[in-house]
Image (cartoon, rainbow, N blue to C red; front, side, top):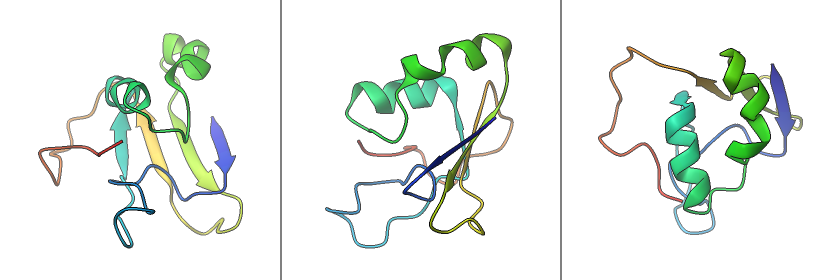
Length: 89
């Protein structure tokens, strides 16, 4: 499932506060829920409940920059995170 928006995925911090924050490549549904509860507004966790329930990954993409890879939202990941903290909402 792809969700097109005006940003290139989830960022590690609010770009209004941090200059040029990195895009989070992969995030789990659980991490998404935590960031949403703390104020991240790219995609609300409750809005993706049906695809989460079925384990369907979501790719957040930017309509203004379709070449950007965006952020993949997945059930689980074995990828070692680059940072201890996923993001700051």
